[in-house]
Image (cartoon, rainbow, N blue to C red; front, side):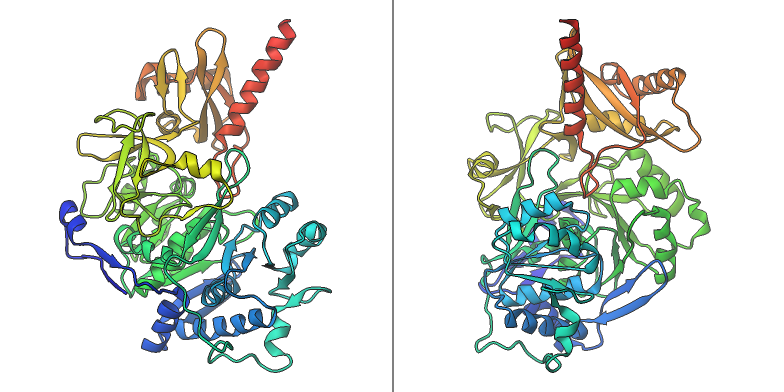
Length: 560
């Protein structure tokens, strides 16, 4: 394996020409990265784990090699091997990383899942994914107990933190009948995985319909060299903190793959239950975090805090992804910390593929430009490139296939045929290009509002609303209207200390008209306590649209 991150290059075109990742025919993240670092430097720190009570554990790559070998040998005892699908549903505990590495070493297919899954969600995923095993904890075991008889492919259930009847106990297996060997994996022949062998399944967040299964191969971790090396600007001596949970793809972006290939250390903050974003500030200060990534939702909470109370001088680079960042949030953060927030774009299906890099002009609110290895265009509905300033579908060129792009949606011909067309992968998102060829997010295909002949992206309206002093969070959708067809409607969560009123509605509308084009302002505003979100924290605009449509139907029925 060879890669050149071209750290000395400060020119976008030159970076594209020089950046290289040579993927070997056989590659395994467990052996070729974790074990390699363990052999190179047995004291090299890989992870610092902390929790809100102040408990702390540190793990070297040498520790992770030994622990993953132990876990792999336990899995072998229960018949888990190449191609078996294992669902991993754990909080941010070290065992999550141990089992991910172990399963990769065995050539099994790991599927990280959020602990917030309902019993119904879990039953759907276990059955549609035909999983052989589930690994979880006692807190979530009851969910599995309720549906395991309805999931015929599940052969084994494992607990990482205790014992229950009919469950494998990880802690028990480590000690009985004798300590599990750490030195090597107990197989007659070592596992050699090819770069295109299946390795990882993510379930998409499912803002509409049932979640789809996204399949990644063993080359996928190498694609995150772009994420970690270029966008997050990591070096081997960095301590990186991404605030994601273990259940979704953002964890792969910021807490394991690219970071550990480069040799950086990751900080894991094991917070559970109700989360207060300002808890992160003393963590950044105490551990002297050097690079930081979190979604806009958290940045919006952080800028409300008294940032001057914390010593954040260790931070040298900040990034954000998951959804577009409001320019006003970026401005306040930079004023308070001296650091701009560099946005990145991607999906569960990709690595970071569009971003603003430190040497590029920083345009708050922009997605940035395509990163090396990701040839990206904007197309109209017929698949033809659109002009500067015109809205288009984000299309990723497949020749050559980008390193890190998913292989397929498993058992979903309809989704595959819709997404893969004419040599491109269509992400389902829309954007436009400015004169400098920077991408600007418009919204999901289904989110774009068509009102009185205009096409309106919800994000640009939400960005305008975010600048109003009383607005904590908002979601904008199209609401049916008998005259205009559709009007812009905003669902708004107010900051503490503010009360909904007719005057508040008028003030917000006046503000929106001033900040954005008059035809884009929300003609209707509804104040809510909270917005519906997916388990990964993304706003469910589809649910809000459906709610508006149902109200419209009921109103029509009443008139009749």
